[in-house]
Image (cartoon, rainbow, N blue to C red; front, side):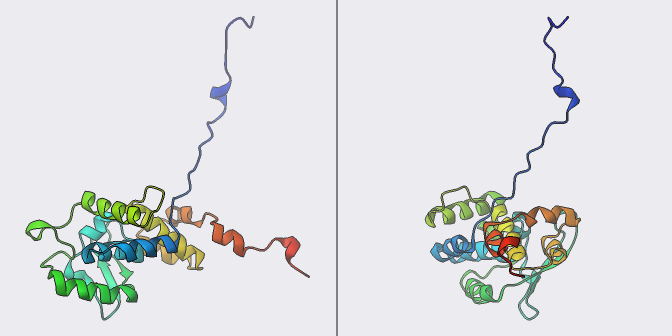
Length: 197
């Protein structure tokens, strides 16, 4: 009767393993920025992390998108054809001013040869080299800087709705992936056993 091999595995749904987003701590990111000598590359890394930008958003930034007076950057026709604003970090302003004075970009904020915009691959290489200089023992991509931006905002208590807007997510459900419990968060949480009545 049971001579044939049979399995009941098809009756049970497969367990889906959800991987948490990889991110760097702030010290690692600051070290990447500090050890990057090229002014253009330093500015790129600072904006990728400081604004939580996608690579496509960074390379499509135009000079006219930067508003230093209001302290914000316009992200035009981002993913999903949506426009939005992100903050312009005050600490990046002097860096951008120095960059403008040295490189005189014409149209795009970051231009390669013939005043054309940077390629995504070039930006990825910039980030990779910065991570190597900082001796970070893991693969670092521009998107990991974006993950780090969101994770650090969560750690600092920023409302997830604001983070959703800054990241340009259509749904807060997408943003909720960043509410994973980080090491820093765990250290801040008190066990009920340790809380005195």
